Length: 153
Image 1 (cartoon, rainbow, N blue to C red):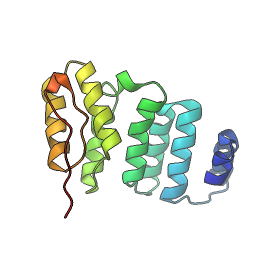
Image 2 (cartoon, one colour):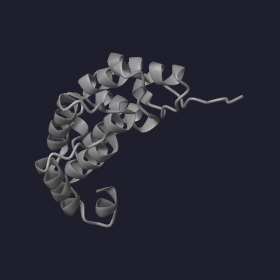
Image 3 (cartoon, rainbow, N blue to C red):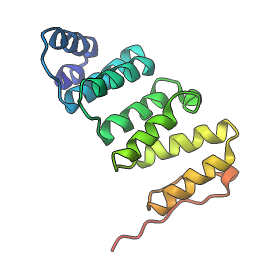
Image 4 (tube, helix red, strand yellow):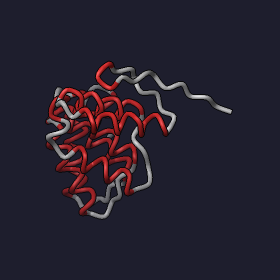
């Protein structure tokens, strides 16, 4: 499915997913990640969330790639401002439950959305959390933050 999508045919990849599902073929996390991304691009994040829920109900555990992808889709498909009013913080909690961490892009997107919504205290909390993890937060005047400098030994 991934190759089909990358060849410029995401609709065909989604159709392939539907055929596989109809035939009872069990999908792994990589296949679901492909479907979640492709459907998100074609149909929107809400459909991706539905597939994510289906994935979990069928016993396939999402990984950090899955969660990061859903969070990134909120930005890429124009729902950037809706990130906080949607189940993003729930997804964030699920990421942490799996013992993994969002990447820099996702942290920065979440912080930007919080700042836009006027949720400065919460934005500052995630900015500080990001800094503690050694990730590079972009400077934000609203938070009086500076970019993180990561030192590797």
